[in-house]
Image (cartoon, rainbow, N blue to C red; front, side, top):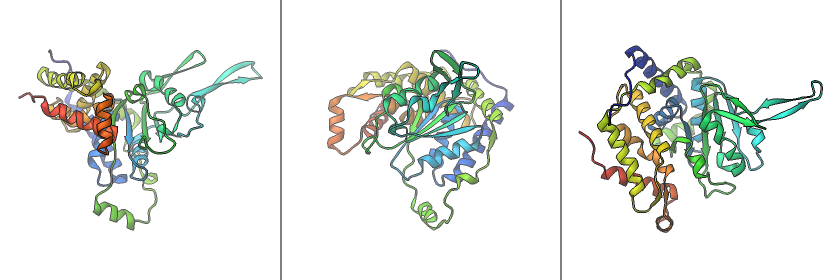
Length: 330
């Protein structure tokens, strides 16, 4: 395959790398000891993607989402998802103006730059699906009228494990809109002891924006200039193709998923100070970028349940196995 990206002027790349560094440092002050998770979140938003954070309650999912939103100097809104949340509560509604005898569109909280959809899987499937158009096409259609969303537009969603009471599993179409899926996990012993002694309840409120919205958008644009050599692209394609041929996987990664995989790798290259992608960018992001885009056979899912594993754990294991069998280009 031919080379598929251009090389941007060095000063533009340097500015984008500085933006990523500022974001990581800012968010890292709120989520201490989770540098790898913070980096993954920054990669997702720089690649103009949406981020899904899944874990048990109380480990910092919402803290990460709020900190990332505040670090980006843009408007943001938080949507607390509940079972009685309606699509109109998210998208907006046309209201009749008796004075003018016309309907006036009242935009919902989706009309902002950064949307925090907290506990998204507590919303009903109908409300979840209301966000699909916004996440994919960056626009909202209400009563036949289409309304464009401003840039940047990012959805950062948190969700509890699917077996928690009062949750509705996200459908495949919804999951596919998220560039990366990650989890926070428990803090280290040292960090958790510091948290137990701290008298400060909410460190996020003290965060100041790390970058301006304009600088952030310019940094996002530099992702298109990161170089992907033919051999490295072949490596990424081999991983994606293997998910479609792997025994136990009934639905492999789609072409849209493969394209998102490449874009995430370009963002990781930029975050690591490079203007080109290396195989490690793909191997390190394979699980967060691809595991939520595959579906396992009923037999494999049953074995997973017998072993006490969640469907997510099993999908991640399968992706790691796939990557381990692909030869790394020299």
